[in-house]
Image (cartoon, rainbow, N blue to C red; front, side, top):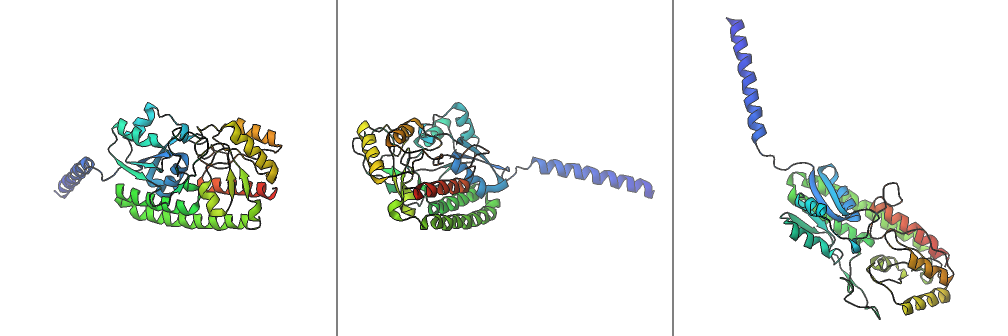
Length: 313
């Protein structure tokens, strides 16, 4: 009798467990992990990965060594946005195609403008430049070139992730706090690299005007044959004036960016009698195995190369 009862009890428990499991499986999960997030370009994608950690899966629209200024979205990019729960863009006119893409794809999720709260720089009007040639003649969108601004970026990202995934909010806040300390250490290190270089020697030639925030923060003068957008073409007169300035001021620090066409700057350097230094990473990370796989690596690489170039001025 006891044996029969025990068998009945075991069968009942097993059946109850199966029913409970089926009921639990039928309940909707509060949020699927990892949370799908789409970032407009590679630098922003890196920041989202740092803050989100294992709780997010990041898709980047404009990848390493690619130019967001000249990006042309594909159908696959629209599909990626539709499937995401958070779209993260830089704003400040950097990627005007992003919100158009989101609208045309029918995206209904949240959108974060990561640069929210940044004090935007206004570009000086360029003489002889057609102001309709690109989307951001006045506002400089490259705010991430100042680590202080990236502190705002990561805090904004943490808050936005916490809204779409409340269960992970504490993790996102902890990750952003830890990363802020790394950004502050980066800034301190960078200040030290430039401290021994007289301000009068802090002059650099680059292929497009993307270092405005960096220049203001670290007291460096950047001169570029292109404007703030890589799709702008400088006039022959502008290039000739720049060559004269390079020769007059004996500027040796000449660099091209990883996602730019190097022909113009190479010709400029040749005509001015200077050597083009290693590539700088400005609007995009390097591919895997390169010197700028993350934002922190990008900044350390650029600072190291810029300091060496300016010491030769």
